[in-house]
Length: 329
Image 1 (tube, rainbow, N blue to C red):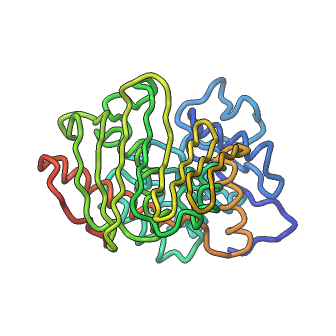
Image 2: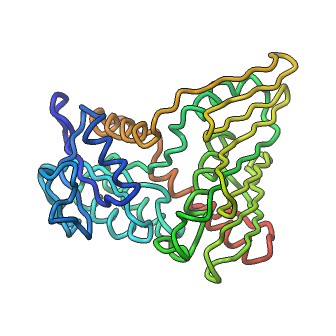
């Protein structure tokens, strides 16, 4: 599908819940190169899809949104257990697709989506939004300052409230898919390598319940170790990555937007990053790719691989933390 450079890209948004409303806000206010052409949601207030934009068409059936000729690209922000059916409908309609992470609730579903996306030939992107965080960006810019990477540690801790009740929407799975998927993706980005094996422990292992605490050890093909700590058990939030290199250490705190460096060669340093909503950065990248035809910075394949790593983590936890290989297809 070709897109006229002077005409805003018409985007249809499927899912306008708590997170989807952020996408709607940015499409309405912050992206002149795009416009919110339609929304789809199961429940509406007073018959209108969006109270802030009642003129935007609202469809109860997402198939009608996908078929709307004003919709050139579709953004999917639904519970991930619905992603497979919706994403397949989008790519079969030959429309560009941006889908909120995690791409799917299982490696099987993620592979089906990725294969269909590849066959479509359209721009398809996974919204691994942490890649667009300002502190993470500063960390990546300065990563060469610490020499050869030796290992890294990633942590994401959040409050129990707000988690999908009993993994609802996540196929009975919990915080690893809900928030830890960011860390699994970031481990690939920061090492520039694929995760080869995992060893993982959880407080509860699905399907026995949705996990709220995860400790994992990921090892790349080249032998780098990535330590992962994900939880939803305490008050307050922590979002942090630490890189330990041969010539120093570098850390980023994306909750506080701070980056710190310790280096005998380059000295110590602390930097504050200027935060921009990561959803906005994600949308800008997606719209740019659709309008130019250039590959997106985060592909559906990237989203699939993060889910495949998660799948291996669940397999390891079921076996008491045994080291298991990640199976990619």
